[in-house]
Length: 102
Image 1: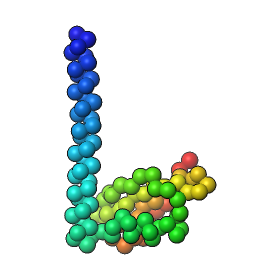
Image 2 (image 1 turned 135 degrees about the vertical axis):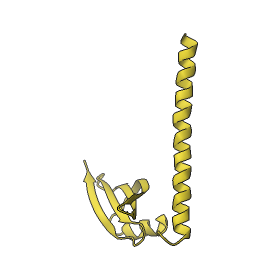
Image 3 (image 1 turned 30 degrees about the horizontal axis):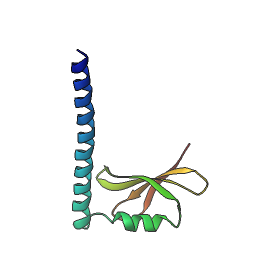
Image 4 (image 1 turned 180 degrees about the horizontal axis):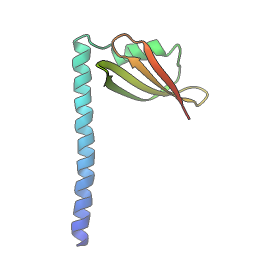
């Protein structure tokens, strides 16, 4: 019984990790497709544009779609230790929304 439980746990962990990598690969492929089609700006350009208003270290970036608009959701930490979450229009580079996390 103990062996069965360990096998089940190992299988579950493997499934979780493999699903994460598959989703990450799919996200990358989708982002590359949009970038190659000229639908979005590169993340490099977006980060260069926002760095003057929001200098800091990037913690996380996600490419999402809301109301048929591609958005970069960027989480960063500034020099004061404040964490910011920015929503940036991926096509224009315009900052749509910003929140300071607690």
